[in-house]
Image (cartoon, rainbow, N blue to C red; front, side):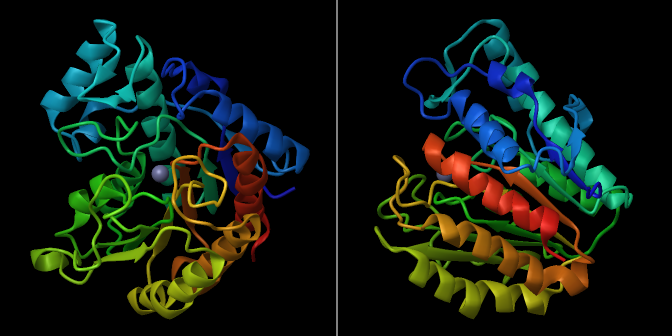
Length: 318
Ligand SMILES: [Zn+2]
């Protein structure tokens, strides 16, 4: 039994109802739960509880007007916010706050040394959410909030975020692109072919944050070999050079070959390998502290197989 690893997994996150036919659907969590359970991983970690995020924490990264608008849209039973992709129901603000607050609480427990690592199986996802608007199924930027916990509450000076979702983590990049205390690395399908159309390799940070944003893009159908080379030749050396004090992962599983929204061709095996390689490259500087947060991944079978492969590394990698 390893109890210095936490998993945030809760039925509440199935109450964010995106309506019929939406790929970011509650069944994703059922698939993840089934996979974690049959791999024996749910019992091998401490089960974390959702906790609603406070407004002042949300306001670190989101405009108060936007936070208010999310609440108002849900209370008014609007079907979406800002863009039709970002489908909502009456409960979505409450659930998105539980997701964000659960991630914040996991980050705090890691910061206090009560946990070494955590995986948060939350929805809605967060990495497309901008300061003042929703994009791509995302309401509040969960991983960005976690970064502010380590930066603002624990005064860490070097926080690394690696986003391996097939889509560019535009919201996260924009929130930290001028801050050298957060290194943001995103691997994703080339913006010419894939949503959201940002994340070109020439986007490398702004002002004091110049050099602390890294975008690595892939052509359609590129798979394990290309992604592995990019990891070994660019991502892992950048992490070793930065010496992060904590590693945050925007864990999307939509770069898998069988994902209906992605354009890449990663295999099942790649997700476990990549997680182990990221942990290995940062273990000395982070002391093993890792917080991983679910982003995309829309094929239920892929989620059932690949999320456990990722979580197994978080639990067992030493
Ligand atoms: Zn995605």
